[in-house]
Length: 317
Image (cartoon, rainbow, N blue to C red):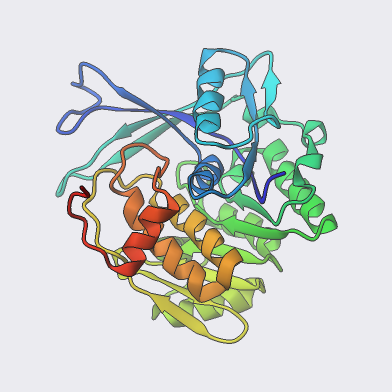
């Protein structure tokens, strides 16, 4: 029985090594990741029972995705296998200041885009505490959008908390389309994550971070609004107050997946001790994620609590 259930698409990620480009690299590194799957895998590494529901093609790429998520300790028995369609693929062109990075998606006509919400094993939500979704899913088409609506309804019937990361992707839809679709979805949810860039781009909110968090929470009427601000940390607005959390310093190996790590850490801490605790664990796990290659953070709860205690990062002997 899972404590947290995530639903969404995962991709195969291909990227050149440091200093290489997609035009010149003789080889590409393969990773697997997807926002909701990453959150589940991160939580599993922290010792939280997690399950992930999705739809993948019954081919080597689809099996690689599932095997990677399962290897992290996530229950993947709720994944639907499609006889046709593709697995989504993303190519990452790493940046190095002052050169910006770029992500190229190849996910049109994926097996997930054709998902039938009625075919999912909704009993996977029985006994869980949290359903985690993101704004990527409704951007993938009519069927994924219907899946999000069905998932929230199923969670509400079971009195689960619904956690939702806006996770805006400009390559999937324009800000106006995201805004019109997401505001009704977000209305009344329990935990909503949004980064400061998406608050400006999608919701057209500017100003001091605490004020933005409060205004956005009031606008979408969620229980807790968490605004992440990169190196400036994060703030959370709930019914009573606005709480702030600075970021922890990290040597950056790979930034991708940092937001998913924050969401996983926040859920871990929130379930154990409320909003302020969620911010602390979220910031610590986000910092740790950047020290790992790939989308998934392999840090344990011991690692997270060492960061929270302020322990140095010298070699343990």
